[in-house]
Image (cartoon, rainbow, N blue to C red):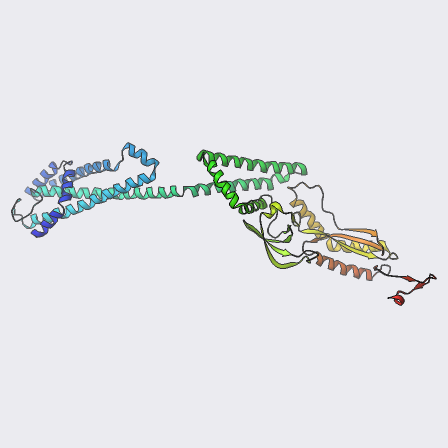
Length: 470
């Protein structure tokens, strides 16, 4: 037991010396006197209550002492409020100091409790005996030192918890500060999206109700221009207020990027133009440059088309090929959107009858068949045209199906002009041809004209064509 006390004593001498300096600041005379009285008269309840009250007073003194250590000076406070990394360093150092003190006080307490065991097991051995190592001069002094050490451990535990919580708060603030750029960027992107949504809703729900075509077109364009002009000015003022010298840096960086990534920039600008100007949408049939197809996907850099062959090489049917065109094409290549005004297109079909036929009856039959087959398409086209061109300046209205006539070399030629869904014009023409042939077969005074060759002899006699076929 003696060797154990000696080892513990030597291992904790350096911490006890620091503890002695701290203890010198705490007035423990009253507490030690109470312990002496309690040891002299064992079992006194009054002494226990007084000792508890005195220990509570000592705890408050220790708390005040540690509070001075924890609270930064005015200069430190001003510095750490502006710079979170420095505040974090100070907080980590402070927390490390408190933990070290806590561990030292725990080591001190273990040594003091070991000596207390000696007092309890060998009460007759006096202080200063040559065969026993003592850290205190009296039993009451030892109990006082143990009590103060326990109070310090209790206070240190509570301070460590509080400072650990503050460290975690500072770490979270540093994380927020590190990602502040992304949070600010996301915030401004949401604001820009709300501005875009507001402009679109006003344009498509309120301004579109203006009945006068010219006024509606002018108001819509002016409103969109004003909204985006204010937005751009707001962005510039915001950037200048936070980064006054950013434009000089952006000018240098932007010049290099514009040269090295000019194709990419053009594709992005083209993508923005597609959506802002509503050039085309998914499912539209368009011609972009020398390519025609149905839009399958609109990406940031490329637009994919399902290719359609056009005459004379193609047959207005899907070829099965997928074209991936750079969005920059919309800035330099001619663009045709067949679905811009409606999902229908005008188709022409020629029918020729002989001069001997009843052309008036033929015209009536063609008009009737054309109305039965295509009037529904014409009506739907008119609705779509009126709805889709409300934001555009357009005075003309789509014409309904018509039958026009002229005199040709072989007879009376009728030109049927009608509406058919885009991509189904050949199907509609085929159906019309079948119905026209059925109706003409039922009329004896209507005959289709075709090219014929007649031959005459020198005497002027007519010769049957079959006799001089070659």
